Length: 270
Image 1: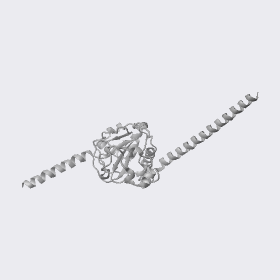
Image 2: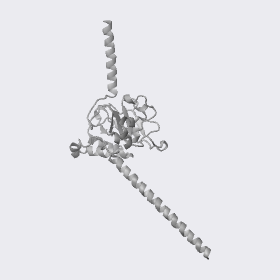
Image 3: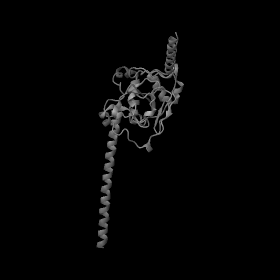
Image 4: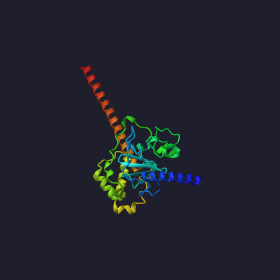
């Protein structure tokens, strides 16, 4: 009888702990663009990661972040993004995750995967080791940046505190309308801007059915996605312009030097 009583006590403790965790956040597996099983009853507390333009949720048992106007979740070895704190979430390929999200130190992951074990808590995860050499070549330089030139964090969409429980907007069109009305911030990161554009396409009523399968990942599995490719093209164009300006300046200096030499020659002849 005593043994059975101990069993019931242990079961009661386990059930109560599971119930309390479910109130905070429940983790499950869902379909991209619909739900990944993160169910938040209210707007979470978000705290700035020191030295980074990123927020994290210290009270959630989830890898939940906010960066450049969007929420980011790392779960089951996948990244997801949403413009609302409780989704729906879109699957983001590892080639398209913004660099400052990749740079979040290990210690701010509230549910770190097992393979994070042994990694430095004050450094980013070793994504190159995890995702392989091909990914590391595509995202070369992601872990190198000027820490004195970190962009300021985006303002938190605090208006979403008013929408919890039954008031939470479930329709993507309604979410977008409220977001446009109440949150005027425009993303700075080119990858995030691409995510915003694809949310608009996904939320359009006439396109949603036909594009549901086409936009399961936020960007194609190319080198950083279209937004990054455009950014690289812009950078190459800027580099060409700077090189051309440098050549023009050199030619101008040569012409000025030749003109000064001719003037000195005339002065000597006179």
